Image (cartoon, rainbow, N blue to C red; front, side, top):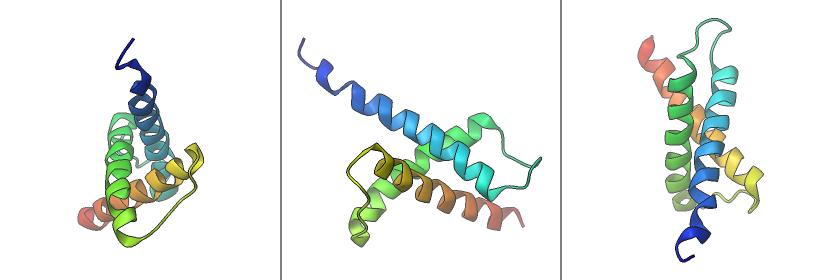
Length: 89
């Protein structure tokens, strides 16, 4: 069927974003002071978008496999959480 060959990419994008948001939240927040699972997932997806846009502009290249996408999304999510943590202070 035409059009179904690209369904895997958006689904993987969202799953990688969710996973990176969760990992970034565990790395960046104190044990009992998280933002919540839903917010962490949204931050991961936004971080994935941010890093996907910004890294190529800066000439930063990660691996071409899924783990490269995960590392890129993790960097973006950590950057967003760092800004949130600075604004909360």
